[in-house]
Image 1 (spheres, helix red, strand yellow):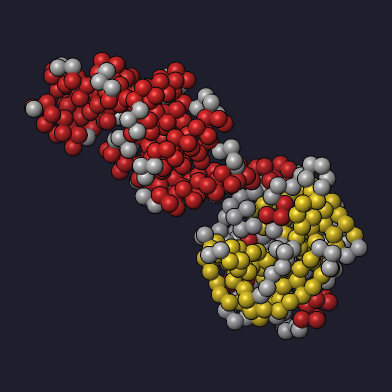
Image 2 (spheres, rainbow, N blue to C red):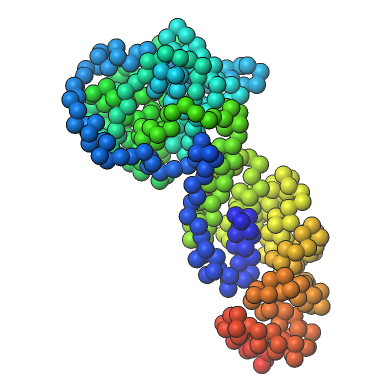
Length: 444
């Protein structure tokens, strides 16, 4: 469906009548579910205000840095990622949240890993699988082989306010655990995500470590984000994973990460489509490129870049994007239909005709390809072939007003006024504006 929407938006370059329909049909960014293991989400389904008030009303003791370190030292650990050859290539911090080996860390540490190990104290545990992965919030919940492990106490980030003192515990490779103090500098929306900005220095390897409040409760997960070219320290709210910590069904690390890549790409393509439909072309391109970061072989994302580039009249960039899509899927009729229309806009009509003929051979019932082929023939003054292509588009999509309009023009070029009038009659029901325009040309 996403690719269909993308193709139709490019068709609108030649057919403005379709724009209003498509713009009204933009869906909200989806929530992706797979047995509730992997999904993109905002907030937490486990949020219970009454429970939160009850827990916060319990007696709570303010603790100093040494006490927080002492109580959590055995629960803060290091995680290392390995490639298929067993070579370690990435490391970061993590923390244990349950006695049966459930661990929380940053997604990016493991995003291309084949396997991973967690080191807690003097012990090292293999990662058995993934309970939850969220690329957008940069968190992942792992199940390790460990048992009888100490866990941190979880708090609530919703009570955090700017100026609050907080503590980061991390496990820098080769140096063991450490704790540093800082403050909350603000609460920010980062790409639609609620994040806690910190005035607190991170080091390479700090990502994935817990952020504690004054009561020794973990209220966030350390995350570094680059803003205006500079690294900024943030905490992902603990609520992002709080309801994902119970051991149960899980995916292997490889399966979970591969599935997340596909879901992330689909998500960003949908966001890109929404931006494109609203005319926010640069935001749209940024979203499609994020889709390619997640899945470099996303044909739909390349089509999206082509669509938006063509709308911006950057036709060379559009053709380059479509060529990359075709390298990954040479049989994609949708891509060839898009490419053919880009060639039309560039005045490269012979290439447009050949490309669109390949598209209709590959998918004979693709009405938009027949329609675009009609445009290419008409631009080449091959009006009988243009009329035949428009007729086929109408047969496949009887409500495609633009095809009736194009067919009417082709008949006029063939000096068949009577047939052009029949298209005008149909257009009066489908698109009165186009009907009036065609009528003016018939009267000329």
